[in-house]
Length: 337
Ligand SMILES: NC(=O)c1ccc[n+]([C@@H]2O[C@H](COP(=O)([O-])OP(=O)(O)OC[C@H]3O[C@@H](n4cnc5c(N)ncnc54)[C@H](OP(=O)(O)O)[C@@H]3O)[C@@H](O)[C@H]2O)c1
Image (cartoon, rainbow, N blue to C red; front, side, top):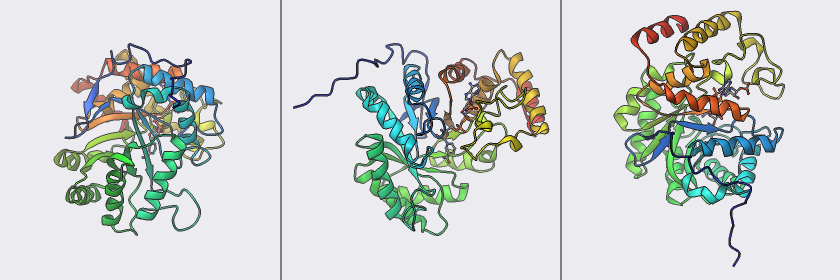
């Protein structure tokens, strides 16, 4: 029998559980780290494997037990999961039982009618592909990445229930569903016997849509919230105050989700004012932006992205001050509204 020895190049830091707080996800038994690491950007085939590995190792050493993926993260589609699988195979998989790994399907993944949407056909096939790329036997959380208006919600939730019952995942989640869709999804899953664990919406100082009904639904249904893009893809940091750095997301030619036009003079004015407030609090703007999303009592965890190890270290330090005075909240509201 061949036994698997952990790769001697990676041994997790013995101190990894000393500083990271873990919060219960809704009314489930699962605790999530207040910060999770997302592999949407900077972990693709075009990026440095050594840098990706260093970021994953540093995150885990700092107590970030949760890594968030999706079938189409890259570029190219699938390649972030392949990178993740390589780093797992290099030794991180020795810690599999200490990790929460999630993936998703919903947006377009492969050509034809079965590579997009919310059908049982697509979700189950995509989950199987993702498991292979990640080199894991199961996901901890599997998500419907987006609501598909052309597929009955019963079918999409039935697929998540099947994915859990067949052992492909332990918990079910949804992403970017509206409050009404979330309530319906939770009811269907409850009836099926696989409770809805978690919702993954965008939430940051510039995008507060979840406050308009979604958080109420999540609280009432006992569902956790893990919010994405807490830094608005890097805009809620001091990096764009002096122009657009060459090594920033907004300057990257291979990605379409943030570009120079998003960084208008009006936005920069708000960022500058927020940056001043952050400095008064003794934080970087990135830290204050993360603290602000975690200050919302519905939020279980914030999924950060990163392009280098230092950013992960900076972001984790946000956890040292999650408190806001009423005056600070009022100042923030007046700046961003
Ligand atoms: N469910 C969904 O539909 C969905 C959609 C989007 C994202 N997500 C999830 O959420 C994760 C995070 O999204 P995101 O990458 O947009 O998150 P984000 O945390 O808002 O932005 C990450 C970017 O901010 C910059 N950054 C991070 N930490 C910094 C720091 N301490 N100081 C200065 N700059 C810093 C880096 O930009 P540079 O690259 O410019 O250095 C980094 O790439 C994704 O990986 C994915 O897992 C889910």
